[in-house]
Length: 115
Image 1 (cartoon, helix red, strand yellow):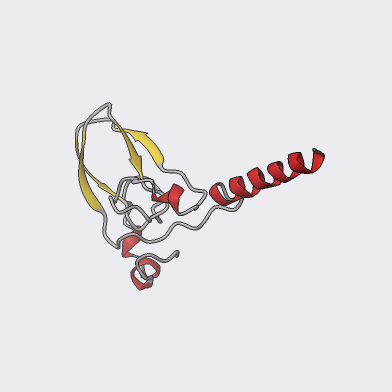
Image 2 (image 1 turned 45 degrees about the vertical axis):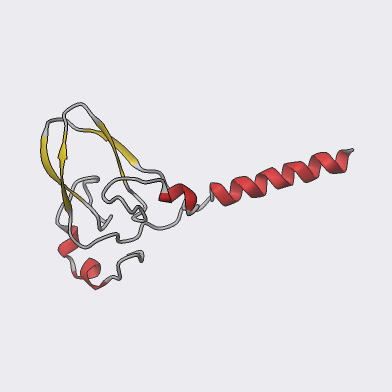
């Protein structure tokens, strides 16, 4: 009976390790230009951190299904209006674009690969 218990526990920990890796994957460049979006004051949004979402700049769950160990950045819009959200994932002001995409490093990088 003890063997079964240990085996099950190992099974669960390998499952957890697969879905929740200890070392998160690197964010990848989704696009090399920001996306302008209309935000509504007080509404919460989920900005894609991993760069793998097909609904840029927002999360579509890809971080989870691709076992990245990353999570989206939840943020609440302070005011209603149009903002530029980062898609190169290298901004120093996430989720907002800070112009980092113009850097040589980002422009030379391949879309879908980490910086």
